Length: 361
Image (cartoon, rainbow, N blue to C red; front, top):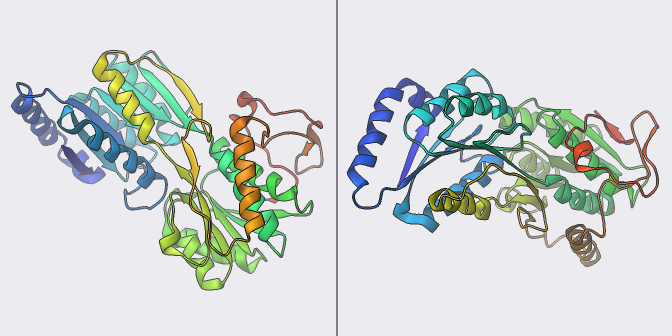
């Protein structure tokens, strides 16, 4: 069973919603006593990007468990005061496991979790944890390194445009990994960044992509969630990469591939652990190796040698033979951050707030 709730409806009718959910549990308790599980999304489930990818995982939970679970999700929740109210209302409405899926939900999730110690919470991409609050993250930078490898081989101008959301470590890390990989093939490769300051706003994303192409970029990457940058690339005759899911259908000529977020197995496992009474607060950061990060099918326009090189880099990252942040690496000021052969630690990457040489932000 799924309960779909928009943010406005959820907040306006919270008391009624709580009553409805309580009645639903009472009505099914004798038959199955389903586990109430909730998801909080920062964007719409139709964004075709990050939120859509999480919702694919949510739907996989429903398909796997059937009437053993009762799932609620709230979409379009801003990363501000609203998210705390939404998370608290989900807690007071009887949900036993709550997934909050955006970095900006971290403080609110931590606060609500402290107020409901018997409930279980999980927060995506954050770094603050508690006894009843687990954190989970994907090594998106691994996929972005492969995109950079492709860009470095296919960009004739040696210039990529990057439509970015917010300057948090996850996004900065991705920009840097992309640029470093491209520079393996073109040491003069540049990545020009425009910050949209939003996760999802097709208008702003479209404007940013247009501006980047006007600045000389002949390949577009993005860490925002709509298909708008891809559609601009399609209309302007340049290549581009999708975000979080396979976006080929929106730009069949431009879309080369995309980093694909694959949350389903993680969500199924965590729900099962609650059902089994085996849930504990954990901290995971998984990538290619664990199957949390994947790649969309390659565009037929990609030469065979580029595809083969991308596959090899993915395999080498998966095996640990290649680490995307291995020196020598210099920052924008030309200072050596990592000497030859030196690798960035997880702790350093999770705090990354600087750009490699070649990034113009």
